[in-house]
Length: 267
Image 1: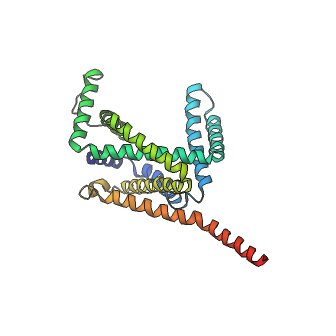
Image 2: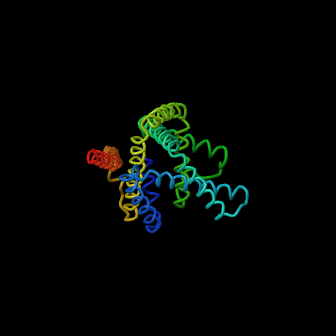
Image 3: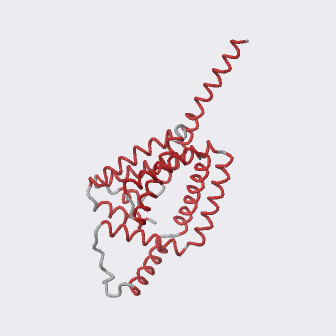
């Protein structure tokens, strides 16, 4: 997987710094909110999540049925945001299921596919594509725009995942089952954990984009220390999870103490 990270780094370094700054800042700020306050403001988080999904759905529907883009996007965002807020418990269960499925699936892929297997799968997929679709292209050609290289990276990921699709599906289903069961019985705890995972991911991704904007070779510097990023990620997830559990339970504890004091006074 190290080659994939280096390719992502090389592609991002070709992008203008201005194009990386805004997404990096947005991801970092939103990530901080989710990381430390997602569970306390779960209704806002779920509403924003539903609104984002609704806006995306409205955009797709507008393209399929030639509808007004602004109207379809706004309606989709409003409808799904309201539905998500009204069905918070269901959304939490669904969110936990999807996150745990993704974590288990991609964790299996990252640890089961070494660099040599990764290269072999990509080479085989490219050779097949060249033979069937573009036999006249020079296979040594590497030039291209950043957008083309990003598309090529996604194609390579799909090729490697396709070679391990069976095992990935099994691990994803295991993760989905764990997330579903935990979310059903431990909704508040799982909401805090999911927000911490998503927030940590957004913070780290945003910071990496900001470093790329400064033309810093992040993945190259970490190549000799592959455990640094996973360790930081796990530590941040654990810290954010504990902080959210404390913040989300503190007001309830204070309110319970006030009620108890009032009862004592009345006695």
